[in-house]
Image (tube, rainbow, N blue to C red; front, side, top):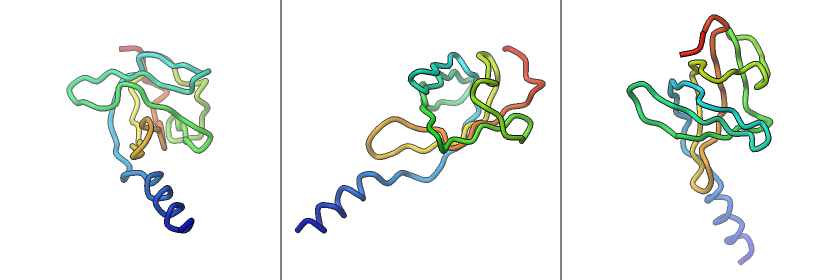
Length: 100
């Protein structure tokens, strides 16, 4: 019986395949580890979280979230768990990106 419960809980923790979206960073909350996003023409999550596994890449080189600035256009690969908020797997941007 406990095996069935664990299997059921495990299934609820699985995520959907990664999605990719281009967005503009509206704000960064370092304490909550969230990025608030805006979009030009597409729709996507308004807020996305990151964790220790999230990869930040500036000009395709490893970077830290501290290098990311509000107003920068980013490409985010994210996952949407069945339970919980969407989370970033990878955030990339170009160093030449200025504020929009």
